[in-house]
Image 1 (cartoon, rainbow, N blue to C red):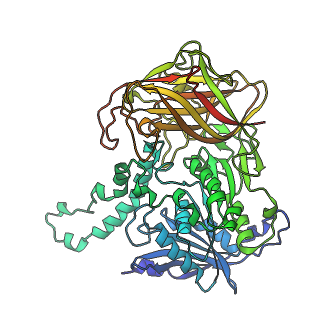
Image 2 (cartoon, rainbow, N blue to C red):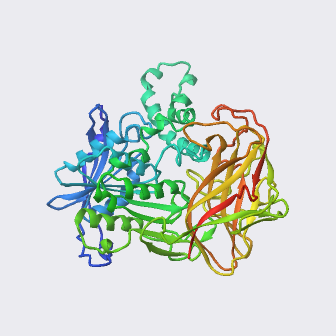
Image 3 (tube, rainbow, N blue to C red):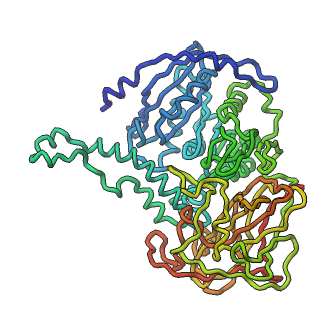
Length: 595
C-alpha cells in the first residue's frame, strides 16, 4: 500500500535555475552549454520483477526533446543528491536519484551488494525507456554508490553507457570488509551502526500497532514503540564475520572477478588517504587490461586527489595538513565534463588530455600522466638497518638503498590489550576518532617500544615517491598467528611525522586469503605487506620513515595471537615478534621513485 505522503511526493514541481549557472566556462573547444529551467518529479516508482517497488526523484530540463540520463542509486537517502541533480538537469541531463532496495523510500529488505546487479540492471533499462530519455544512461556517486555502479555494469544493461564511481572498492572482502586478512573494525562497525538508524525506523513503523496498544491498561504500559531485536538490524555484519576467508560468499559480487563483464568506459575517482584507495587504483589498472570491450579498455580515466572519505575535495586542508590552494577542485564539474564528452559528444578538449590526473603531495600540485603506475618510476628498495635496537624514536633504525650484511634482528612484544592506537589515516565513517583522520602526526605512536622506527638521512634534494608501496619482510613470531603493520611517513624538519599510506597482514593469510594457515612459532617467514600507494615529494630537509608494528586499533581489529576464530575470540596472549634484516634475509621497504 502506498501512503498518502508518498502519493503527494509524486506531484510535479517546477524550479527556475538562476543565472549563476550561466557563468560555467569549459576548456578546449567546448561549445556553449544550454541552461534549462528544471522540473522535478518526486516519488516516481519502479516495480521490479519480484514485486518490490523502488522510489526515485527525477530532475529534467523543462524543454521538448530527449536527453541523456545520469542515475544514482543510493542507500544514504536520495534527497541528499538534490544539489547535483539540479545542477546536472540545468545542464541538459535527466537526473534520477533512487533509494536502493530496503532503504528510505524503497521497499524490500536491505542487504549490502546482494541485489545491486539485478536491481541496477532493471533501473538502467527503465530509465533508458522514459519518454524524455534518449536511451543513454550514465551512473554516478561515491563509496557504496560506486558499488551500485560496478555491480550494475557487471549485469550488462544494454543502455548503460558509462559509470563514474568516486572512492570505491574493487573487492568487498579485501579492501572493504577486511584488509590483508584483518577486519576493518572501525569502518565496519561505524558504517553498520549508521545504516541501522534507518533500519530501526523502518522496522518500528512496520511493527507499530497503536490501535491495539490503546486498549492497554494501565496507561503506564503503553509501549510507545516496539524496539526491534538488535540481531535483525544488520544480519550482514555477522555474515561478514562468519566469512573471514575469501570464499564464494565474497566471490559472487567481487568486481575483480568480473572485470571482463564490464563493457563501458569508467571514470575512476579516488584519493590519497581514502579507505578504498587500493580498490580505486586496481579498478583502473585492471579494466585497462581486462574490460570486456576495446572501447571500455581505451575509455578508462583516473583522477586521484587528497581526502575522499578522509576529507573533502573542496578544501585545501585534510587532517592536520594544508595542501595549498591548488588542491580544491569542482568534483561535480569534473564528472559533468566527462559525461558531456561521453554522452553528448561535446568537444571540450577531454580527448586530447592524458588519461590520468593525480595530485602530488609535498609539491602540492596537480599533474597529468599517461598511465598508472608511472612507467618512468623506478622500483627502489630501502633496506632496514640498525646498529642497536630500532624500538621507538630513540632507537637506531635506519633506511638506505644498500643491502645489509650481518645485522642483528629487531624484536618487540605485541600485547593486544595495549594495542598501537590508530592516528589518522584512511578512516570512515561517522564521527572521526579523537586522534583525527587522514594525515596526522605519528610521533605519539612512534614513541612506543612495540613500534620499530626506520628513517633515511635527511634528503639533500627533493625526492619523489609516486606509485605502489609494499613492505618485504622476513619475520617470525612466538604466536601461531599475529599481525604485521607497515606505515610510510614523511618527517618534516620540525619533526612532524606525516603518515602517507599504510597496510597490514594477518600472518595466517600470508599465502592466501582463501586458505588460512596458522604459523609455526619461531619459524621464519618471508612475506609481503601491501601498503597500497602514494604520490609524495619528500622535500629537501625531510626524511622518509617506515614504522613496523603489529596493531593499528581500532582501524583494524586486534589479533589476539591465539589462532582462534576472530569473530568469537576473547582470550589474549602476548606475542614476541621478530623482524630480520641481514644478508640472507634483507627486509626492505619497496617504493616507486620518480627520477
